[in-house]
Image 1 (cartoon, rainbow, N blue to C red):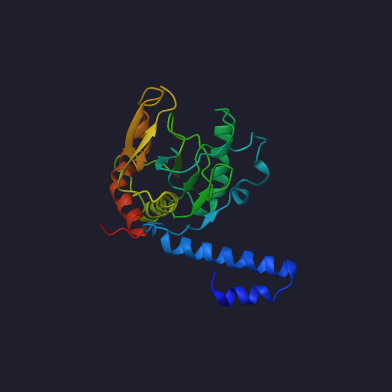
Image 2 (image 1 turned 60 degrees about the horizontal axis):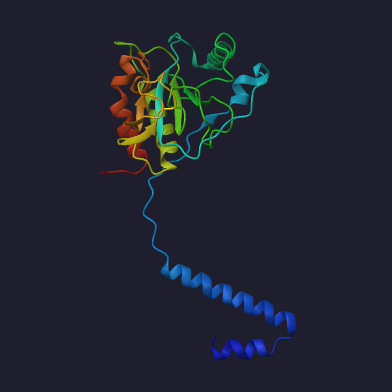
Length: 248
């Protein structure tokens, strides 16, 4: 300990000297950690887009349901379409979403809407499944690959030849960039996931290497998210990467 510090401590009575010694030692330890700790690599993150909370569109239509489940992180995004009519007024989306919610929790007997997020043709992003948009909520959107993934559904039906609004794809990219940025995942890359059951394209327990921004049909035998929206996935990946600040 430097002589000047010893002199100061010697001039302090009892407990004051002990407290000062602790603060001094703690400060030295923090300084040493700052000097020796490796510099973390730059992370590629993106800002959180504006999201309409589920309480705003669901309101009193919410049913009793089990508590949300969570994963430890998000490694991939699955893109879907809701297979509902396209010619809607965006002002009517809350009521349309309530219909989707009632169909999934009613006729299908799911515990909640399956998608973590829904994006309309005007580019508005809605929180879907309960549990907190900022958290890694386990969804019910992709058979076998609901863990460590987020489901983003485009409101509408985007089969071959159907126009896909730029506002919609831009918002899907924004959500993907934000959620994948939390794990510094490149939206243009591939990720390793484990199938949770044999109803997916992979046997239960099988390891699968899938796009970080995948179509529903990458993990499950389905035509979702529709040929037209699938054709836009490369563009969505590039836009998401750009929003994360990736230039390479």
